[in-house]
Amino acid sequence: MKTITKYQARDGCEFCVLQECVEYEQLLDRIDSIMAMILKRPDSTTFTNGGGYIKQDKDTIIKARSRFLDLASECLGRDVGQVSSSWLGRYLDDNNSPLYPLYMRLFYRIDQEFREWGQVYYANHPSVGVQKEYKP
Image 1 (tube, rainbow, N blue to C red):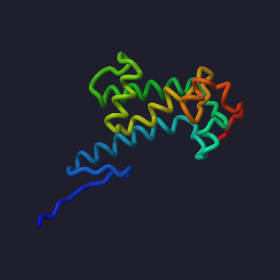
Image 2 (cartoon, one colour):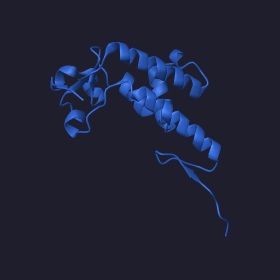
Image 3 (tube, rainbow, N blue to C red):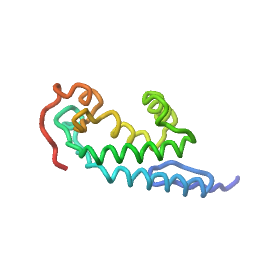
């Protein structure tokens, strides 16, 4: 029998090398700092199912999107501002990137009036959702 050592990041991802886990935790910290810029979404099925929206600040979203693109470019080793958004989303999702949930919030769940909806569908069809503003 052989004893092995594993390291677990705060989101449950496991690593065999301590430094890889430390670097991953630093990435999570950077993601958290971008998430902290935007208003929190309610933890409710009503919100998720079109029961209203969160009015995000336009300038804050633009800054958060810019910081996200810089971070994603750094992580992927290429300028993601020059690739299609569908390619980027697919790449992040297929690789279980911790960037994916933030990507979805910043780029797909916010409509043209900077209202964040619980699902992409409502961001694309805001008139179908309940016209109620959540105040987190």
